[in-house]
Length: 369
Image (cartoon, rainbow, N blue to C red):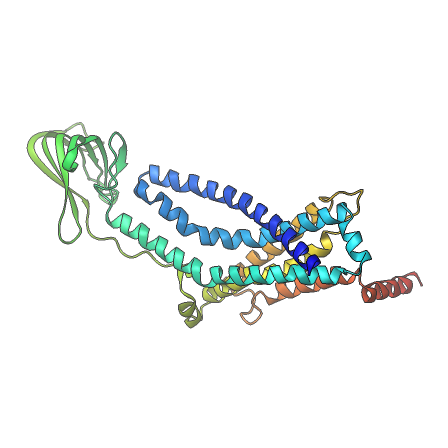
């Protein structure tokens, strides 16, 4: 039991360390992208933390298998490099026992990752879509930022507001209304006003009400411009509530995904299953790949092991694409990829076991003869 706890704890500690580092890196990258979108006015800055939180399950599904794989390599590699494994083997603790202990941790990771992949991640993506839709439907005054040129929600005008005062009163507004791209004779309106306000009606349409300003109307192909001074001026900046975004397959709940029989649905289902299933299979490869001798050091086989992991993950991505394009029959799914990983893991593990050594020696003798 002491050996069991020690092996379990060492791998778990290494996995947590790797997991924290990887999550920090991925979250930082995603934070930069979300912040850039918010600064471009695609959604209010107050949604940055919400969107980051809703993206965490997806990141965790991608990072958990890699963290366990690297955790096994680091923990077992250190034990081999410091001769701890030699002592374990000397007192009767076989590599198969070490594998079984590590597989127990892998199964726990698989169950947690499977729950995230099958249930939590689609829910989080759906919530993310809803938050973005709501932000888009409320775009207008909420998205206006003082001191910055911004595109109106309907994309037909560029606005600049020098200051947004109390009660959402706009001060010193500049608007450039663009013509319809399909209208060859369309005219541009340049409007400058001392103040204004965004007004929303019951249908969700939003109008910009300006006061005390000047409008310049003309065509880029003509020098004939009309100048109009006004006391009040209205322009529509959002026509109606936005339509619901087209849902991706990855945002569908599991029960709805199972009801669909399209190639995209089949590929999505196999993808959700593939990542958690890969965890115990990659464990079978990581345990024998962690074998090093003292002179090699604990990182000696890190590079080939990572290449194997990337190859497996790359095959899953290619398998998903092949299922979507119906290149691979639906009944085959990604099982052939998992079967290949299982065979490779068994071969690597059996290499050092008595039966594996016996078969290997017999094969070499036949090859020599």
